[in-house]
Image (tube, rainbow, N blue to C red; front, side, top):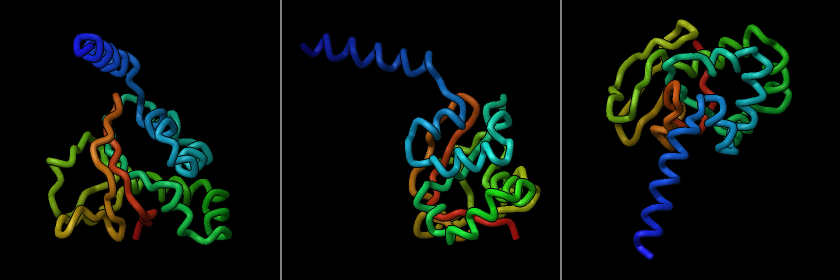
Length: 151
């Protein structure tokens, strides 16, 4: 029985590697980034984040987007330029794993810098990082509980 379980586990690991997903597919398959996926599509950023990368994405969950009043979120989704600025503010060039995170300023793809804090858990601006190191074949996702806005 142990040999069968081991063989199944090895097969699963090999299938997972063979079916590696980009950042967008990884987020969509997680099931709690539906609003993010909708926003990426509205901003025309899906193909970019399916690109070679590598990218580090601080991904707000559906619950994070739900903190934004509906009228404000609808207006943001309708304003492609502003939406693109907000979404690219959540992306850092390169693949930054949690073990490599240091407190300080980090330049985003949008052009502004995020403030990263590491005391009492990792924070990105005013958002708490709630899950780390969700690896995709073109980068990594760190989950945050609040949508962060460029200054």
